[in-house]
Length: 333
Image 1 (cartoon, rainbow, N blue to C red):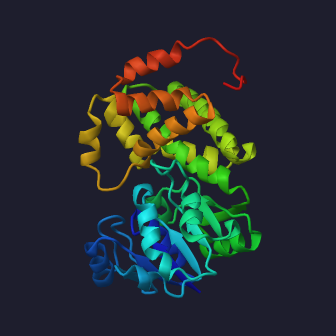
Image 2: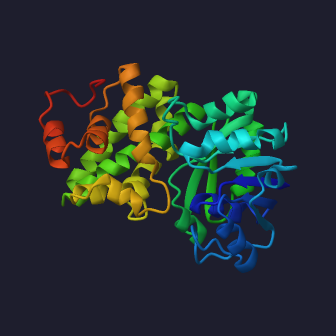
Image 3: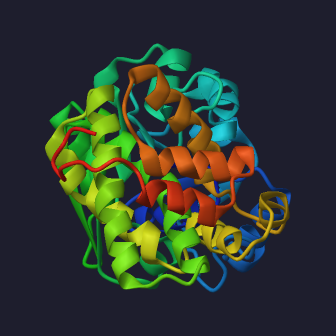
């Protein structure tokens, strides 16, 4: 089998490394430095240092070369560049190859999920497009620590092919037909991770974190269901699993942004120091717009948006959250 992985960040590289155990993998990297490092040192020194990459993994800066003859295409490009890269690669996409997005974000201009962008740009049948998502911190996966993930596709046979590609003794892969729910959960949890980081930066402890995660799950479930996802999906790996990992891990870029904000730093300073993208910063704006359009109440997401884009101080945002009107826990709002 020949597999194309488009995007050589930490997660794209980790997935390419896994797939190379069973397939000939062509990894496309935007940066010439990454291509050179992988070819000469068998290591992505910029995004996944310290992990040897197998000879079956071929790194290239030529998108057409990476896509040629691929039987599965993995899209691992940040959300803000996803459409452009896909558009450039479109003439070279093998017509029968499933396209799997591992990007957890929402396009700012259109408010579309990545699979919707794939359908827009390629005209593919929906059953050939899916997502891979879950509590998957790239370095832990690359280290071989036990983990689980989920492949969401409406075509069970295509989902099983992707499942077999990545399944191994350290990564258990499940399937789920709910593409919308899995993809929405993966994007929305990044906003919540910024909020969780802010709570930590403000010095709050485990009670605060537990309360935030529980109410965050309620919010992302409400919006995900409004978008067409299935409620049960949000209790699984794509929902609760990914939410917990991203909100509590020091490796989470979104949480790192939140911690710095909680300590009083400015967003521009924080993001300027980061090599890799914290998707939640952009997604916060998209989620705010989506929830407003659909009439879905999302108080944590709204306050996170106001902190990021309106300059609301985190402590003031928290006070407003804690003093909202009284209501039952299981109320729809």
